[in-house]
Length: 287
Image (tube, rainbow, N blue to C red; front, side, top):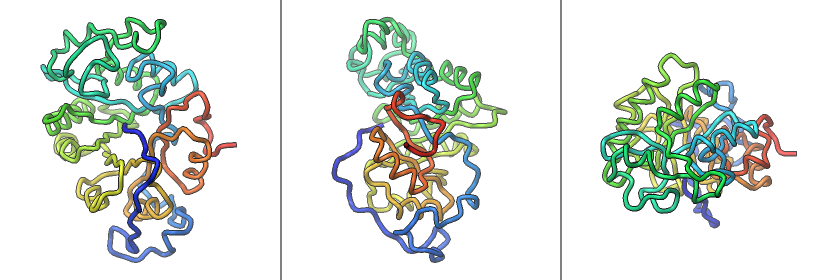
């Protein structure tokens, strides 16, 4: 996910719910004025480890997931894209230089080439040789350990629809029969729309760095279960608006205890964090 901006844009302050009915209480007050029990069930833990373990291990690797789990996290976020031959894999950037021993566009290489790259040495010597994991490998790890997964569909530019379709189709197959399906999120509406067409039963979340004009209508048009925003633009008004429409409100990337406490007090449904060594994921509040 992208980093949060220091100066948040002004949020819209609608006075009606998705059904066009006035809210029973002002949205600028307590976001929990809407009874949370009236919302659809939400099976995901409130704390989500960003890219496995934040910055404590090489991002988007199986090693990172193990580190995050070692700190008690039971929900994880990762980025999934396609290789040139259509294999789903974990990688954030479109290019390989920052987090692997490779160069160039990740989407231009076949999985056989990508799987042989070092995705851990950039972080520290102790992780040298850690490979890029396939999406299937991470899915098996999460399912066997009972972990929830927030999958950011991260397409190579120009591959939005294809990536959304393939990731959703594979996720549906991998989690078939499981009690807690993965949450499919993306900044790219085209990817979410393709995901909806391929696996309409899987929940979707629209990722937003800013609350641009029409964001709420876009989330509803995509039949999203959640909206995941930069934490700086999330407030009581937005949470109430989303809850009033039957959607959940999540934030990234929350590393400051004061911000975490503010959002938890407002009734946020999920916090994506790098600070896996500083937050206790079993708690709903910060001491």
